[in-house]
Image (cartoon, rainbow, N blue to C red; front, side, top):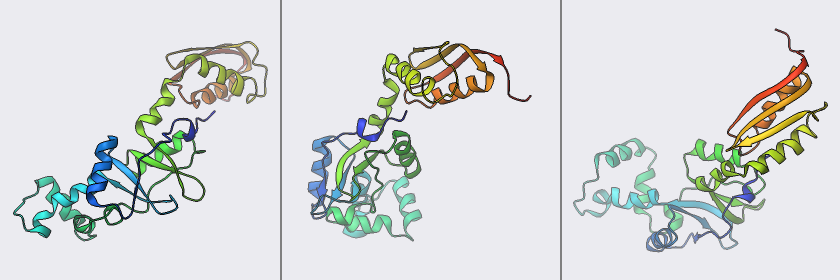
Amino acid sequence: MRVKVSEVMTYEVASVTGEASFKDVAEALIANGVSAVPVVDGENRVIGVVSEADLLCKEEFKEQYYGEGYRPPLRARLRHRLNQEKGWGRDKARGETAAELMTSPAVTTRPQSAVVYAMRLMDEHGVKRLPVVDENGVLQGIVSRHDLIKVFVRPDATIAAEIRKNILDHSVWTDTSRVEVAVDRGVVTMAGHMRHGSEARIAARMALRVNGVVDVVNEIEWDEDDVPA
C-alpha cells in the first residue's frame, strides 16, 4: 500500500567531492538547475550536502572577513547574530571547498523507505530534497519535493485496483464481495454492503492510507452496527 522512494526518486544525480572548490560547487548547482548537491567521498558515500544557502554565507559575511565594505541586508545580519554563538555563518563564510561549506551529516533516506517517511524527514529538517543512499551510505539518487508529489497523480484506475486487491480482498477478514470502489481524481467512493459497521469503517480508513488518495467517501451500508454508542 505504500509507494517507495525508489519508485519516484531521480537516479541520475549531480554530486561533488569534498575537495571541490567554491566555484565548482556553484557551477554544479547552476548547470543542473538545482539548489543543493550531495557531497561524496572517494567511495561515493554521502558525507554532506552543500546548498545555495551555504554558498550565500560567503556574500553575507564578506564585510567581516574580506574587508570589501559590503553591508549585508537586515535579514542576513539578524540571521548572523542568531547563529553567531554557534559559528555557523562565520565558518561557512571562510569555506573554500565543498567539505568546508557543506552541512553535515546529511539527512538521507533509503530507496525502500515509504514516501510518507521521506516527506516527514523533509518537513522535520526544513529541506527540499534528500540524498538516497544504500545501507552503506553510498549515493543511489535523490528525491525532491517535486518527486514526492507524484504519488498524488496516480491514475484513478490504479488506486481503485490497489484498494480492491490489497484491502478488500486481503486485509479485511470479512465478505467484501458486495462492496464497490469508484475513484474520481483521487477521491474514493466506497459503496455496497457489509455485515458489520466496524468493518466498513476500518475498510474506509485503510483506503485513506493508500498513496494518491485525496479523500474517502464511505457509503457502505451494514447489517449490524457493532460499535458501542
